[in-house]
Length: 90
Length: 264
Image (cartoon, rainbow over the protein chains, first blue to last red):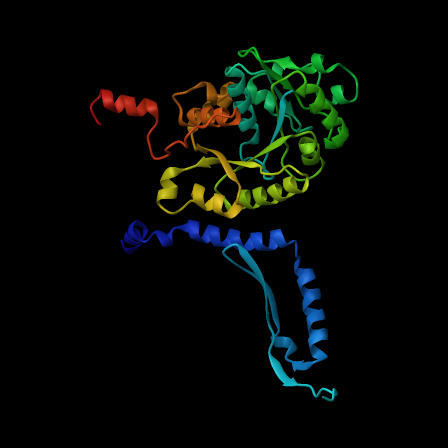
């Protein structure tokens, strides 16, 4: 009964929202033509570059593509453990 | 000089062939000279949808390889004067024709016909590349499902990469009741995701099965929902401004019937 009422009053519960969300995510990857392998390479290279400047927690590093509205963002979450001493004077 | 329109979708089974048959039949009924080309070599079907399967002598591969002249391979429709079909070969595969030959074929057909409508095979391989090679415009058919819309998105990208800009979308097999319940993506949802112009919407209709069983395109039957929807699409292809059909409304026939027996 509750399900029925939910279906009648709450349009958000329809399965189309699941479909739209899944479609949106799958299209982010399709359109960017970025494969999981490519993302993995990107991740490894990011670690390499950032490690030159600071100590990072490699296991906690997350790199993913995200979409909101019509824009796509490359989101990288990089936990910094400590900064490296830089040798540059002045 | 005519116009070459390719009908494509990526995913199979969404209604490319049915749409090709109906748009072609509708345009011919308006008095245009129309050639339909089945490029699904190895899996030919446009002939049966049109009810012309018993008339095939030569096919597209016979034409491109020079076994016969183009005029010999074109089959005249049973019902409509201006409608012709160039069937696909059934015993060969997609590599039997190449994009250059298709371009030439389209050029030849364009000089004789007002509209050349190309039925593209499913997939994105050579069959697809052949089908779009000589096209001036593209129509993309999809259904309100994740898989079909995803494939449509991929196809739109490939069409634009091949310089077929601004393809127009046909949404097939929509069920207004399920859309109202929130259990099927709506026209707006799909347009929003694909960001292309909408050419038309065809509601799910059992009459498609019945007319296809008979080999008669549904567009001839104005009393059916799908027939009306295709009629509107045909007029838009021909350049007319036709308002979108109200999918919530019941079909003309039933509305009339209800009026007669006093239900409305």
